[in-house]
Image (cartoon, rainbow, N blue to C red; front, top):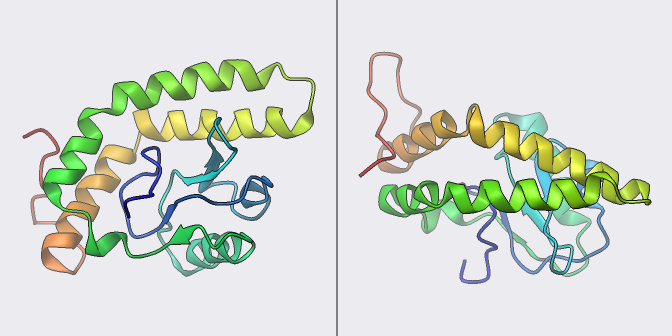
Length: 156
């Protein structure tokens, strides 16, 4: 967990020192983006069903450095999720700057990567907060919330 990239969304799966071959989006484009330093893979959307889990695990399996992990549930807490969420402006800025750079790149691979950054940004602004609240509930209760149960707030 110490090597987890800060751009991974909280959840069980994350990338930490993955390869830089940019294969993850070919397998799981709705879940993976690339960071700009070494091109490592970052999980921006946690899987929500068996099919999505299969795709993410397939992307992880394709990583020659074995840089993915799935022990996030053992490390995340409500307070850590709140801290990550509180820094979302930094994440939004990174997404915007890199998307702007890659979207006009002459290589198709960077333009596709920019599309992933746009998807992450959209999710950050519409849907991620609810997913994180559901995840925080699950961490505390080890089950999904029922419709009548309140989800934790992400502001302290």
